[in-house]
Length: 258
Image (cartoon, rainbow, N blue to C red; front, side):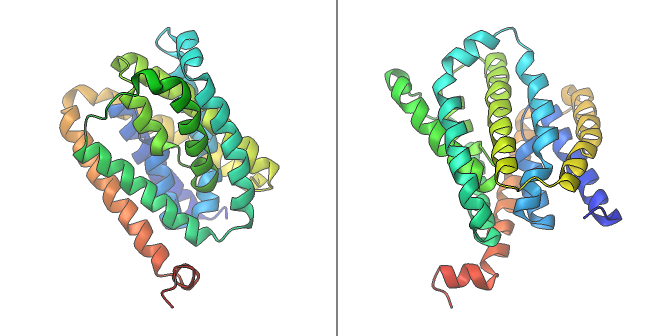
């Protein structure tokens, strides 16, 4: 797995995903997971993104001065997400990766479509106390299967209606907890081999380099236009992952197409 081609793919992937995160404050796990799944496969991609995602989210979660408020507000969401992730990782270990790659593609497409065409989601309001643990469990389950927390976790957090700076810190805290839960789950189910941990550690360098560059030119790029381009690109990438999965015989057989 430690080939020159693999190292090049990882370097370019995390330079790009780090750049996106540097410009708009999110996107590193979504972009890196999608690109690595399309090139190296889902299970390897889930393991490789662990350390860069965890470290960048720790930094994001510590900035803002609202750590206690965020952890209290989303405590039940994070707890149920961790439980859901653990159970789903057990399924992942025994499942066909191509089928779950299609599920990841669908999740990415859903997130991009909602972000592009439904910019304002109704806030949960008085339903938040019972809705948060349900969203957490469902998002955690999908995280354990696909490595992605974006649906419906990110959409729900955006709908809560937090101020922008507080939302960014909240996503950093929740994503840190989700990534930690995913790492423990993958390790517990023997899906985190040593060579993959080495690659994940190496990926920190281009991830932080991309973030630094993105932050430097953030003021020179209209954020609204950049976000639109980002979500269109993410939508196309998700569609590519779905089509690639549908071309696999095991997926077509599962769907009754052959």
